Amino acid sequence: MKVLLDSLIELIRRTSAEIPDDVQKVILASLEREKQGSIAESALKIIEQNIELARRKSQPICQDTGSVLFYVDAPIGLDQVAFAETAREAVRAATAKGYLRQNSVDSLTGRNDGTNVGPGAPTLHFHQHRGEELRVRLMLKGGGCENVGAQYSLPNTKLKADRDLDGCRKVILDAVLQAQGKGCGPGVLGVCIGGDRATSYEHSKEQLLRKLDDTNPVPELDALERDVVKTANELGIGPMGFGGTTTLLGTKIGAINRVPASYFVSVSYMCWAFRRHGAVLAADGAISAWLY
Amino acid sequence: MTKLTLPFSEEKIRALKVGDAVEITGVVFTGRDAVHKYLFKGGELPPEVNLQDGIIYHCGPVVIKDEADRWKVVAAGPTTSIREEPYQGQIIGQFGLRAIIGKGGMGEGTLAACREHGCVYLHAIGGAAQVLAEKITAVRDVYLMEKFGSPEAIWELEVQDFPAVVTMDSHGNSLHREVLAASTAALQARV
Ligand code: SF4
View 1: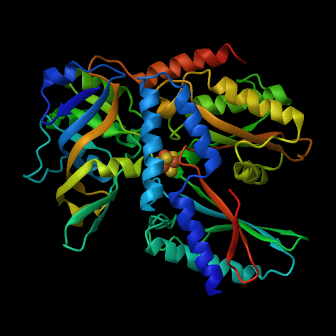
View 2: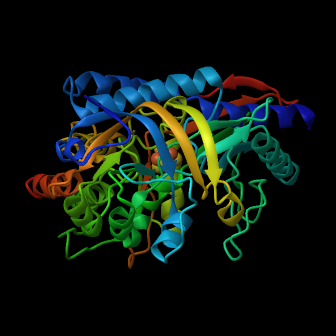
View 3: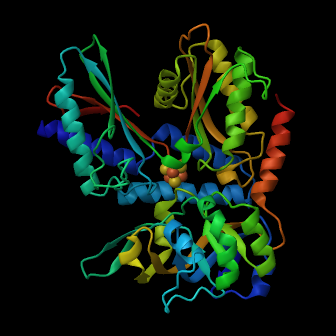
């Protein structure tokens, strides 16, 4: 388990200190587009400097190192109990090394034991598959942006949103409007249409595991993703809510079945400090390839 | 871009307008939830802490001791300011603050106090923990540490060219209010 432990600690370090390439590319492209000398441009410049500095110093990009969420694609036969135990140990060790802030609080007593390990922390999602490969992805989800996430139940009278894709579009854009700059924008939306309340939110976060430059295989959803980004960037909210043309860096939308009585649209907002990485692990637990 | 050196005169602060980018140099004090509530309820400032013509920075820094037993700031980004809204207006008037640094903006009570007393709200870049920590050149001292713990204590920090944007000025203008109104109208035209 020592090899696996070291791999998971390295995964945490890298996730906390290094923005994935697909995200950084979009940040750089948006920096080009903002008006020269505008405060939006200067905000993005500071963001860009911060990304470089964190990578160079191998220190957290943002001091809020967020909720620690593991997504594990496991071959049949993986001992999930042992894996989870090693993941918790890795979180403890990464916290002691300063890759993670002491960031996990007992909800009843307010006590923070400084380990980032407790009920629900870290969170592990296992998905079994028939292949051989063990893949583990990690997302560090900050609190400020989590607070501006939203779930809508359609139809929504106030927003004139019916149970169709146009209704989905209306509520997704409403979430962007309500968030303004408060989620440390420019952000990325993960959206789920359908499901029960809990599954819907869970699925919306899993959308954030997709690379920003991928293409949604469902043409209607692909069109909606592009439309949401384009429209949001016309609203003039901008980085940090300072105004400007970069409000969203991307939007990823998935759909899952619902019961006839429910129609949920769940929106998870990820801040510019988009921390996710992933690795393929060899049989001995060593990292054999990076996923982003 | 406007360079500002502490302490600030009222005239200098009144000259700032919403949307101005500034860089701050001088001594600032941190204060967040516990400090604001404490001061609001009549708590006394330690005698060494002088906020007159100065700044409160909404920040809970990560500070460690280095090998030579000196304080060192590891991360020091702004925290969400709106939680201090119930207290901020009174504290601006009572202690003669000229600026608040934070993120996310504040409400009408703070805006009114900024107008009345000559104070501004400066928005720092949320999440830019590394860049902002580099702008802190020295930790001078810390106060109320036993009472409130490290992130909630009052840290006396020297900053050099600390970047921020005026998003609420002393003339009743708020960039947050403007952007909300404009983006609401823009969205209405697109749905
Ligand atoms: S929302 Fe993101 S960038 Fe902003 S403080 Fe939280 S984790 Fe950091």
